[in-house]
Length: 175
Image (cartoon, rainbow, N blue to C red; front, side):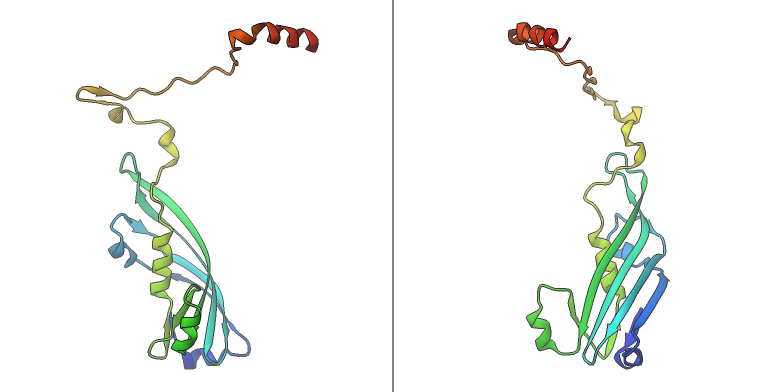
């Protein structure tokens, strides 16, 4: 997803709209826990001015990550909304150091590294699949240890014995 500034200036008055699917297998090289990634849909618009281009992006797709407990594959969908600004002048960028402002290098704008970075930021610390409610039997015991789950508590509330007489009194009033 590259454009030169001269190409973008043609869309100065009417703006640029795009909806593309991009193959970003290179993001797997940057983070080895990503086992695979589907083609990423990049949808957005660009507001073009003389020395500034503002991209409003919606990035969506799905990646396969390892389950934090079992290391099995878990499908993790992502959806990212962002606004990225590209400027020609370096002095203007220094004023907006906290915003998503980038310098146009070599007269070209390349969104691919920015999209990859945003996807990497979406990876959660721990990933669990839908089937994690049931822990596989192979993970419940081992040599000299056993996993014990806390039993589900009854829905009945037990009354503190010190307050039993008060509870009886309240039940009589309710009846």
